Amino acid sequence: MLEQTKQKNTLGKNGGLICPSTRAFLEEGRRTPGFTLFDFLHGYVYSRWPYLYISILNGEHQLVRKIGPILGVFGRLFPSNANKDVPKQGLEQTYHAKVLTPDSARQLVMVREDIRLENLEKVIPYREARDIVLKNPDHIVVLECPCRTSRPEPCSPLDVCLVVGEPFAGFIVEHHPQRARWISADEACDILEAAHERGHVHHAFFRDVMLDRFFGICNCCKCCCTGIQAVRHGTPVLAASGYTCTVDAEACIGCGDCVGVCPFEVMELEDAIALPDQEKCMGCGVCVSTCEMGALSLIRDPNKSEPLEIKNLIAQAERVGERL
Image 1 (cartoon, rainbow, N blue to C red):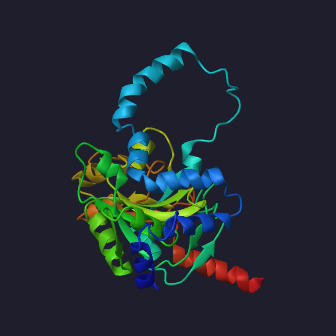
Image 2 (cartoon, one colour):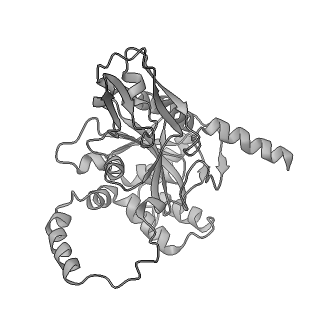
């Protein structure tokens, strides 16, 4: 099946006015409740030109740098009269991600059958884009990271973003043949493992205009990742994994290695003992893997959303189905 999809998407744009993958995206959108033509157009722009889109979003694009100061002055001269009591829908409600532990990330790329898990509000604590609908989950594409490529001095390697399932994988590989390629689930696991060893964080991304659901896994560094930088500046586009770092004070030698590697900068030393800010800890597990003394571990935090552990979620859905 995967080879057939590869051949189909290699046919290019000569088969009609609309590319096969674009047609598949549109057809899937029509089957998605509440998905509008505007959503499709927005999703098309986001997927078709992700490098331009992200560079504008993170402020790296030269156009933003030129007009940003002008817009700031204009805003101060002509302040908005909008009702400030009306809550605004922030970016994080429509474009967000869930931090994954290494095991949770591996589970997502090893799914062997189509699944539909909807309204996962206990796992994905946002108002929109909370579904995991995997069609052809063995269709996996690795893409050069739009965040990294937008930076003047990006981290390497560039090809670390995983697009999972259809219609997303087919769309990306057809429209970005120079930046994307098909990979197997085992190759995806190798990419995840290598990213974790580099101290990077796995994020499962969700988007309203990407059919209101999960579409891929990014393996993010704190230097380049727009999401991590947004969190550090107070915009909650990332949900914690559901775990929190805890420290065995007797085993900790106060070396400070965990402080330097924490992607979210929530670890410090106090009286020569590692001390994570458990409220802000995202539970990525990077520090745990770095600690040579085994003094750090992840524990389930009941104050945070449930982990995105796909095996458990599928099992829960099956039990509910049996009761019905």
